[in-house]
Length: 184
Image (tube, rainbow, N blue to C red; front, side, top):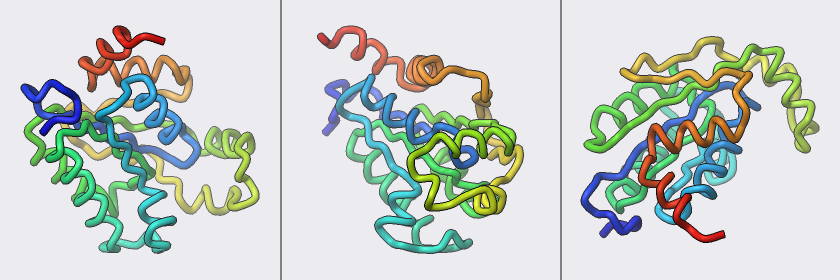
C-alpha cells in the first residue's frame, strides 16, 4: 500500500550527508514540510544518540538499525530522507548497499562545508553548550564523498530554500507538484 496515493512508482530514497551544522536536518524537515505526507525522515542522531545512546563506532547496532528502518519505510511506500553525518568510513558500505538495492530513484547529496564554516554555524545554534570546536574537529571529515553515481554536492553558499527546491525537484518531482497543488 502506498502512502502517497501514486502506487505506480517506487518510492524515492534521498540521502543527505555532510559535516555537523551543515543544514542536513533543517533541509530534511523542510522537504517533508513542503511535500507533506508520505515522506519518512530518518535521522542518524535520533537513532544513534537518542534511541540507542550508542557511541559512533564501526559495526555498531545503529548502522544496521538505520538500514532496517529505511528499508521498511521504502517497502511501506514512503519516500525516505536519510540524514546525518554518516561518514563514509563507518556508514559507506551500508549506504552504498541501500542505494544499489533500491529499485526506485535514489539520490545522494553531500553538504560540502569547510571546517571553519561548521564552527561558525555551530555558534548560531541553541545547543552550543552540548559540544564545541574540539568535538566538531573530531567529527569533521573533509570531502567525505560516497563515490556513488550521481552524488551531488551542496555548496555552503546555497540558500536553504534553494537547496530544498533543488532536492525536491531532482529527487521528489511528484512532491513538488503536490506542494504546488496543495492549498495553503
